[in-house]
Length: 408
Image 1: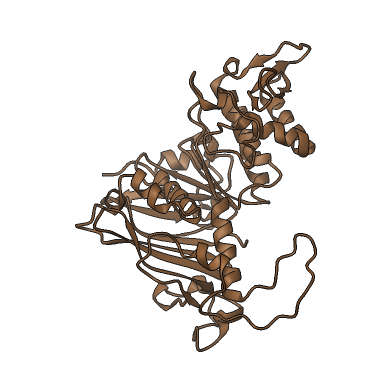
Image 2: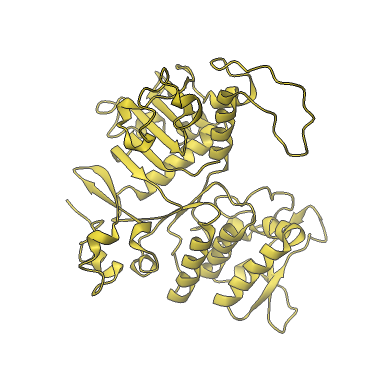
């Protein structure tokens, strides 16, 4: 799946109209209430949409009324556009009579080579997609309107109604090889499975009743859950199947917690379908439990596992990864994010000035809120050149040179 180059959002929560170019590494900063969590929550909604659970997710969020920018009297619909290299996706959601959600329209297709280059489909094909005004962008496929769940699921499974397949000779496929699908269906599959893999994480619940510390099903290991609740079974799976990555995670924990030796990962004796997180110190075989780790170390273990796993999601979103971590642990975390960004895309929202200093200006997207509307601006090293020899990014943030500070 190509990386997500750009997202445009309008009519969602604090966002009236926002166009954000994205790179492999994206650090969101801004004052409380600027809209960082709103952006992350939208990606979570798109993930739920790809899973066929959009109606449930919207209902759980309070209905579409609560998601519209200043409510339905001011905003009638939410519009979203995504650009992934040469393919794109767009949808528009509006409120149903039951406060549920209806698709006003849904589009997907080629935005570069292929069908999108045909003059009858896109007259301005010679212009890069991201340089054209949104009103001039054309998708090759209209996926209908009036439905309550995405049609990507349907078109990923069935022959695409707008692009009839050309006759193909019968071929014997190698293991893991996909059939030669017609272009429209192939794009739908790419978009669907890409968004299905997106994961938003917030490891803030590490208290006494945290699910991370609970006994879990040993087979709950397909992916690391958003709250880290299946950390033990996921680490157990990595140790058995991906030992190199497991050892790397263990070594990173040792780096910030020198007393740590290794995890004790084993099925419970009384029920081998269950497992819980145990660990031991250096030069000791005494098994400690997860509640005997500090909250900050437990969060770091979750973050290291997330960022060092062998098959990461296409897009990782992390809300406030810096919580409770000391400066040396933040340095390790920033390095892990940088390493992960070579294999996937990472969006992290932070309030930590110390953490900000560990990134380059081009990595940073500054969110502000003016007159109730979220705005976004990616930093430019050239624009900051007069300041950077004498000031760090955190100092420029505190001085409000970068923006992202509270405003009326």
